[in-house]
Length: 325
Image 1 (cartoon, rainbow, N blue to C red):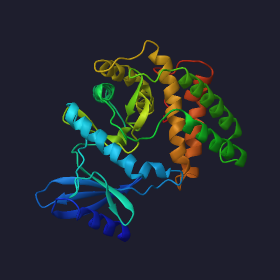
Image 2 (cartoon, one colour):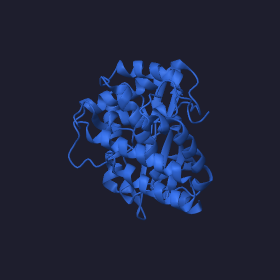
Image 3 (cartoon, one colour):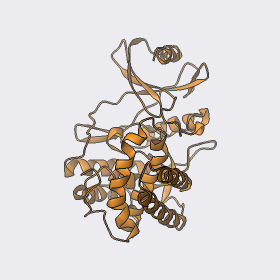
Image 4 (cartoon, one colour):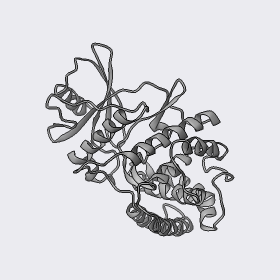
């Protein structure tokens, strides 16, 4: 921590702010510090050092990080969403290098996180927020040399390989590993049939879960765009639905469709992207130091509920008991 704190202090010297305090917030895909300046303005400083052993180095390349900041600038300029605004350093650069470590600074957003979404009204606000994000991605012209990860199914295959090894090693039940493999293959086949036209495909957040959006007054605000990349817009919704009770999902879609169009067969596709998002994220989860302590139980619940329904071609989006209950 002392080393990271020293890195944070060195990085902040390259920005036009007078620092009053630095507080460590946490670590996942990066080390995050909350910065308060002498004028009581707050910022989020990220030192891009991943916690997961399976995190690819491509995520922290200067080009990839710079592209994330460019997308945030595009959101600030082209929507009425309240989203993080990046800060440029003394050299007008969006990424700061300190001893080979890449750092970025964005303005802190005020708001409250909710561990669970407990009202239909909040679900509607989430849908409105996601719809606005996708509408901006649809209308935005991606600049040259813009580099972000692609969510095209490749990482699902990687996750299935890892789950296969976990099944052979007895970390998870072999039957569960086999069920997830069947579901994953069905999902990848489905994704291969979809167009990558602007109606379906563009810049997505890719991690819209309760820890990555906050509520302020009547507004839902997206934060932490560290996973953003090119993918199907329905992937965002599928991942968000992993944390939204089935009773609230219809209102979320209604609010979303007020800002961005849903395809005619969106329910069938969303169930597939629910499965896809879970498998995609397991690539990151499997590399966490404590993954073997909690991930097998999570997989057991998925296999006995949503994934089982998906493999059996049974609808579950609005009726299934969610895996967290």
